[in-house]
Amino acid sequence: MQNEVSYSQTMPNELKMELRSSHAGEMGAVFIYIGILSASCDPHVRAFAREHLRTEYHHLCLFEELIHLYRGSLVLPLWVIAGFLTGFLPALLGRDWVFRTIETVETF
Image 1 (tube, rainbow, N blue to C red):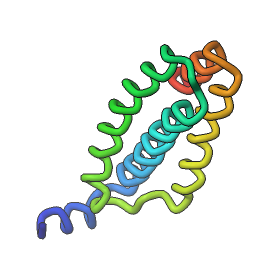
Image 2: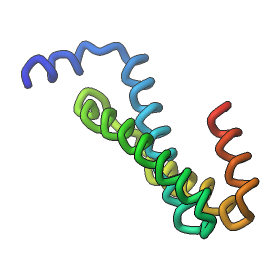
Image 3: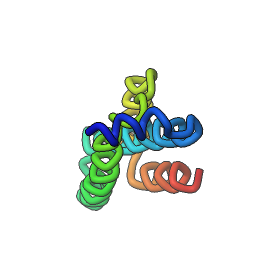
């Protein structure tokens, strides 16, 4: 633990900022798929969302294991809300909206 504390104190600020941003992005991604699952009844969309939720959750867990090395985002609750709405609203409109939204988010 001592090495981890020392490392977090000497870690470059740019790296801490990158980790913070990536953590927030993974949190948002998890909630995109939770939003989709909350609104969609389409079995194909739901299977897609479950599979991607597992992957994004795994990524989030990796960042959560390292969070003691950096400060998490102060606006993380906004990422949760934004992620949920980014999944939920297109899912209300149908399959095409979901897949276009995911394509846009992933290419951004």
